[in-house]
Image (tube, rainbow, N blue to C red; front, side):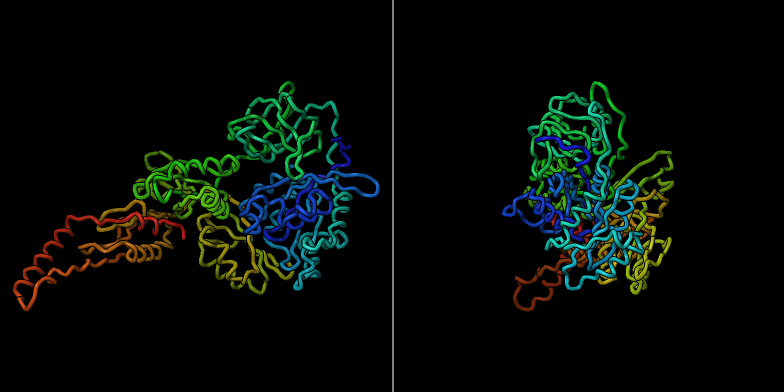
Length: 599
């Protein structure tokens, strides 16, 4: 395969809000460039997981190399299709570092959404050439004129720059291809004698070849058997197979400056390879490219096998998923109620749902997932510090000097006519409105709130309050002082650590009542009456009593021997009192599962 001149290469990605048609547009590009034969095409071709096609979202970034012939010459178009959901913003930032331009896609029926603005900001910070495109113009309710106006007034594009297409029917896609060639600059020039320097923007793992790094070559040339070095990891290796994506891996003799492709490393420890690391020559290393900070999980939840017999199978499943998803964090833990399991860190709630769904589908495992939480930092009165994400590790009030929790900046984009509903919704959360800005027919509301509050179904509640018209994006900010306490649950005056929760004063009474009422419904009655109590700051906040199970001790007696019956009833009453003072409530495993399982 001959190497094309660098000025014949165009590297670009597609960015947009979720479900604005990125994958469908990618399908048409593959079709028009004959990268995939028409008979082999299927919807969302670059979305390799069944889960992606079912949900209509992109989860894993998939690069592809296309060849497009114009009347004058042949071009290499390297496309990176990116996820649109907030949780996968880090994938978007990786792709932006590997390209020179971006197609900004806007759904004609929805207009500009919160994540459109967020991704646009990321692209502008990378100084990428951005091509504004209105998609889904074939829809009967498409608002093409309004979408053009928003691109012009909100994002500052010139009227002549905006292209209208239908990713579904293919209308306008050829014009877009020519615009990509015309407007997106080729990669920067590189001397053929330059030492190699490449950016790792993603990777996968093979038990046969080890880590397969996805790279964008910035300078020089990389060929098989070259001695190479990962700068950040300080790891040396010899280049194995090298190639490009079409979209399946196609071996190639070498990759030169400006190209996007893959390289097998034979590194069998996937944690060695970091996204954002620089790959360079072992003999004459080049400086590190501007990289990324390590991805930190934002949301934590505990995963337990429904049966402890499946613990090893769950461990194997999580480790396999971690090999292809470096953003997943896994720590082994143990619970008195549920046995052995894992504390897992995720990028967000959708990321968590995807991992859980993959465990169930791909490994056929039944698992229990606790409600998600964030990481809290505690300064203790004895001078110590502790970072926790579980209520069972939360210290007693008397031991804590200060608690800090992560905050997030949320941007909500809503039609101005629905802003009243949005403000009412925000009042239900521990949040402060920092700024409001009128953008044509829309309002942008900037809100600061604790990350734990964001996880209280803000996204779903926002959709309900706005009939689906509002959208949000968020960025993690700093850690701030928090007023939080541990809410303990006592069953028959015994604390059950598995039911403890971390709550704020604002939600203390409401959560206490909700928990004891739920437990009253699901804990089986005993032969004696017992109390279910919610306790915080040493005080009982809410209480419910479960009445004793009635047993007919006189059923075997005939006739009206009242004295005999009275004796048996008295004996039963005495026995229940003794059980009440000595007994403990038997809580079945199923009750823990019902209580701890995320709703």
